Length: 96
Image (tube, rainbow, N blue to C red; front, side, top):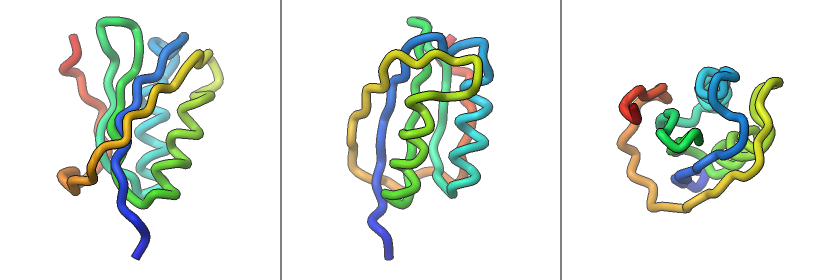
């Protein structure tokens, strides 16, 4: 069985108003990664990804460029302990 991992990411740049959350959700679901994504007050996008190590790394690689109208400046990644708490990958609206 593949190693299961968790990554907490904060993506900065022009990442709000460019479908970043929706495309992150689409990418994560396509790869079988669970977790969530949301906008923050600071203008960043925050996400938690859980799943197969290779798939989580693929989603993080995608986040480094994002959708076509995004301009990603930085992706800060915090590796955390895998919990298995998620059943799907969702967009959260609780930051505002």
